[in-house]
Amino acid sequence: MGTRAPTGRQPPMDESALADPNVIPLCNLRPGQVGCIAGIVGYPAQPQSRRLRDLGFLPGTRVCLLRRAPLQDPAVFALRGYQMALRRCESECVMVRIESPADPESRKLVARSNGAA
Image 1: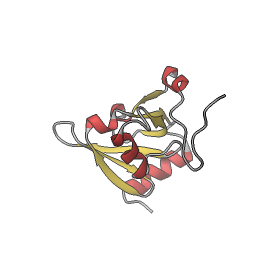
Image 2 (image 1 turned 60 degrees about the vertical axis):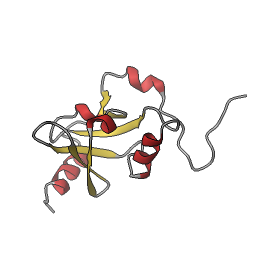
Image 3 (image 1 turned 90 degrees about the vertical axis):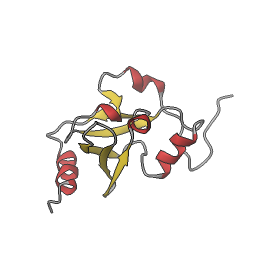
């Protein structure tokens, strides 16, 4: 029998997504680049992964890297209408699929993050 995730919970990340060349760790985005969260490595086993999901880092969520600190750590990301600073060790377990800069939803996220209407 196959195992299913309990109702209301997302299943762990599909390992086949890691083979996709467009799926990279969140920490590898460039400033202004948008990605769509593919999953979180280590969920649900690691508490850090669970906390990231509780903060809104859910599969299908668009996220944009706004800026990095002078020494490259931490980085500030925009998602779901708010900004979140994450250290590299936290952001490297979030896998994102790179979005096209021409995608209208990606442009909206970047514009909202930069304070435009």
